[in-house]
Amino acid sequence: MTILEKFLAKSDLSPVAIDLLNSTWSKKKTLKPREILMDFNQLDTHLYFIVSGCVRLYVISPEGEEVCLGFGYGSSLITCFQTFIHEIPSQQCIESVLDTELLAIRKSDFMNLVNEHQDIAKWYQHSLEAILTGHIQRQIELLTLNPQRRYEVFLQRSGHLVNSIPLKYIASYLMMKPETLSRVRAKIS
Image (cartoon, rainbow, N blue to C red):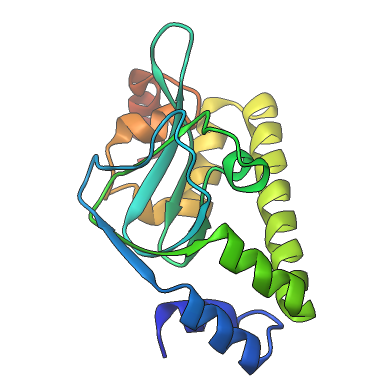
């Protein structure tokens, strides 16, 4: 069983739907660290499944700094959802942090499956709901938690990334300076 099949099997999808998605989600893409998957102003309407590795989503602040919005890693979905849903140029960049292997499905192929198979449509809706609630929870954490607590929550949720990716990306994601993250890490150790 492939990693994609295992990921899909965790849902309420029928075996037929899993086979359809697995066979259609077939375009392979590999990235080296710092390679761009989707650049600013690019119109890429693929939905990606990360087989292995890690990518980061970021924007550029008015001061010219890269601000990390999130990470995608093994057995997760990634795309610029504004671009995927509304077919507008990307306002963010998706860049690999580690060697990364992905599978891609074109929006048109994916939406055909969503429109033809009720269980795939339901799975897609649940996936979007989970992504949305995750983003809302992140916003709440950024606005209400102190730096140490934000880092502790990050460790609970994505601690496996700490020794794999540059700490400056984690600091940016947690909306703190790298020096602040170093102090927080020293305090926790």
